[in-house]
Image 1: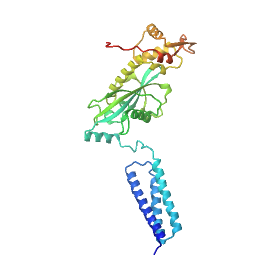
Image 2: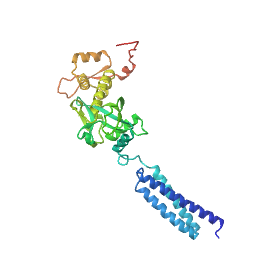
Image 3: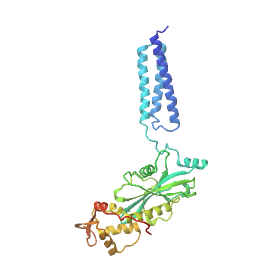
Image 4: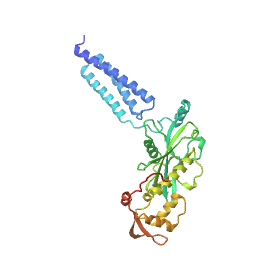
Length: 331
């Protein structure tokens, strides 16, 4: 009859075997759901657990305590390996995420509303206002251009989803996005009821390099866009109106110009965004009256026309400038 210490050690070994098999079952179920990105490493660790468990069982029957103890430690090491792999799991890639078409089908079947975000990224380049678009991958809108968008995840905020979409589709991260408007026409999406929230940004194309070019992602002249997928032309037009209003109320355009710029460059920028021709004399008179432009004393160089003076925008003075207070009704 085995001594009490041996029996206790044997019980410990049997408990370890049961624990290992429980770990194997749990991890196998996890992989079956497609949630583990380490699909090649975890099975190896599980196989190691199984082999060591059988070896431990064999040694227990032979009552070889020192060897059994070593095998017991190896089993613990295998469990540690699985734990480490679980901690290092990366977020699921696009191939492992539930297909968007499947999600839309589920929304339709269950009578639920989906929520998405669409990013309208305007860019100024070569005196033209452009927008970033991709080719739609839906059959209903084959060969049509669309905005950068996606459904939001249950654990995402709207802002978080917008920045995720921008990063996943373009690789850009340091872009400021502002929420503009929501769009909820019942038939705006052919697959299900989807309400979308539009986000907008204005960047200098030369300052941002596109790191991803999937679905023919590139810049388009805003004036050349006539038709788009979904209701994206309506969204684009709404964001364009928002941008035209914002640039007349805030000095957004100066971030698109060089630190030192000419009045010609400034006027070209406003004409491109507002989509109108501006009177040269009145335009300059308006900006000089705001007293926010500083004459640098320098002139343009290497230009095909008469060199113009270079100016800087005084951001500090703009921030200190008193805002007109609103009293009562004003319309």
